[in-house]
Length: 106
Image 1 (cartoon, rainbow, N blue to C red):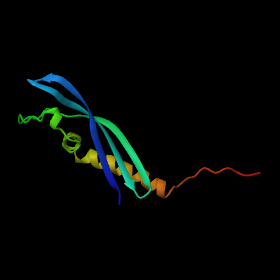
Image 2: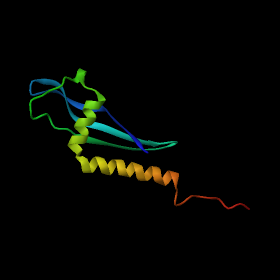
Image 3: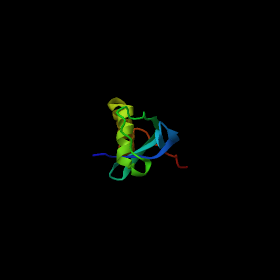
Image 4: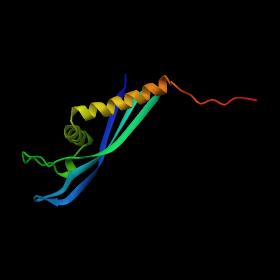
């Protein structure tokens, strides 16, 4: 079984926006899938919108878990699933390769 670790700790912020400071608007995400001794990684960025309900979490109170939630919500279930499926396929190819490179001896 593959374990997925989402890291969304690196973010871009607007120093000042709508009377708030250090407002996160872009997340640099990294996802690592691990199964036994095998792992694969995907990286990217995701724009996250400012909360429409007016709820604001000060930068110093943010956690990776909170920002991962924002990132996955902004991506949508289909994109999150596609990222994790791609990682799973890469791990499967490492475990059961369909091609290997070999050198012919003399």
